[in-house]
Image (tube, rainbow, N blue to C red; front, side, top):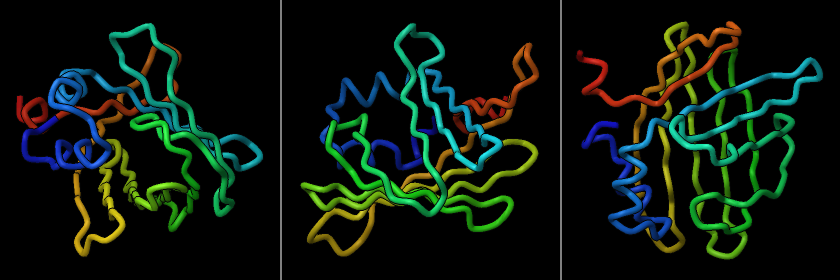
Length: 155
């Protein structure tokens, strides 16, 4: 994670305290995206150094489903849309807070760039963050995306 990627602002919107933000920044986050034969998309997020169960969202593109936001446990209406062969957009709208989070996923052969925008009710401008996830291969040769910071990319 880069100190200038906007992630702190996004996490603060969800009420995450400084210690929690530091823990998330120190974590090696692994995101795995799979598309099943019937078109369902599954996004799994976990900490590479933890035995905790992964957070998994499975959805049919274009169909709304209610899920629990793992950052604040609020029930949100989640919709994922495939905009092109290389761009996917997901949106989550809080049923209680009406906070809207939009993520735009731009895939390439190197990985994915994710732009997150959060619009809180009553606010004019969104909070924005940008992350880069590099593609790495496991021994099983399944695609995996690992969230890394700009500092690691420059090494």
